Amino acid sequence: MWSYRNPVDVRFGPGSFARLADVIAGRRYALVTYGDTFFRGLASRLEKEAGAPVLVIDDIAPNPDIALLEVQTARFAGLVRPPEIIVALGGGSVIDSAKVFAAARGDFAAMDAYLKKRAGAETIAPWPLVAVPTTAGTGSEVTCWGTVWDNAGGVKFSLAHPGLYPEYSIVDPELMIGKPRDLTVQTGLDALSHSLESLWNRSANPVSMAHAIAAARGVLATLPLLVNDLRNVELRGRMARAATLAGFAFSNTKTAIAHSLSYPITLRHGVPHGIACSFSLPMIIRSVAREGGICLEGLQAIFDVEAQEAADQLETFLNGLGVATDYRHYGIDDAEWRDLIALAFDGERGQNFIGRKDALLAVAGGGGRKHMAVA
Image 1 (cartoon, rainbow, N blue to C red):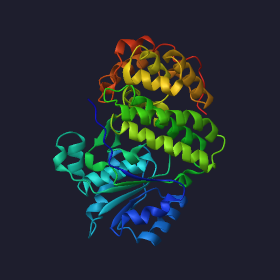
Image 2 (image 1 turned 180 degrees about the horizontal axis):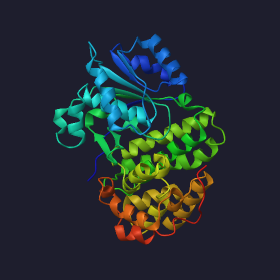
Image 3 (image 1 turned 180 degrees about the vertical axis):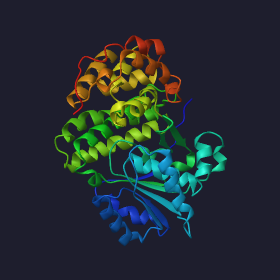
């Protein structure tokens, strides 16, 4: 038996940003975005079409940290009239932050209690969200969870609640034109990881598999072209479509072992999330070579070869983008690498993985065929 559900109303295509005012539909809104010139221009355009927001939060940091989120959430408590909807305009960090604000509704303590499992889902009732991604990777625009980092404590939390599915997602590839190469690679590989992680997953189902296959094939075909043509709106559209489909895939499965492995790598070694959750993918494919079912069916549909050759293909793909697949490149020694793998199986995401610890450890040594620098 299996089930699949995703309630997000997606509006996709070049120029779809113009539909944002329509989906706000006259409601009081708070805008969560970045503070640079590009985003100030978009905010000004939105204000002309939808009226002024009741609050703008534009000091969003990468990998949103819980200490900053608490300070930002307090700004909602000072409003005379609260927003009726939150608009998230930006990358994954913006959308994740907006989900925290929506869940908290100005009361950070209540959200924190839920986040850290001191309280149940019934204790929060999130404000509605509209997500407008400006990068192609996170998939957060069609999921009901977000990532919250505690850098001081050295841990990562996952905020998850059915009320955090965005009401609408507006995916406009024109907003992604000109994003720098490194960011394009990192977000694109995050999308690839989302798609593959939904295959070697205890919650995999035929619908998530179909989305994962289309997403992974899209990333593999498009990303090498896009990195050499960053202003190509057609290629941006193809990557945006792949990232959204990957979001649909893992919106029902969550991620698995690669993401569980990635979190301490980002916290301890400062490796960007999209790289940290993707450089281990060839190793993981080798470890699940004998798994059947949706995992095998999906991998064969993506790579059209057996698992070992698929892993080799993916390693060549990553190296071609300048991404090292050797853990030692990231400052991780052999002992730490094996400890990180063992630790990853204990995490919530690691427990989604259908593979075995001994099988993953058996292919963990050596770190890949090439030792390349990140571009």
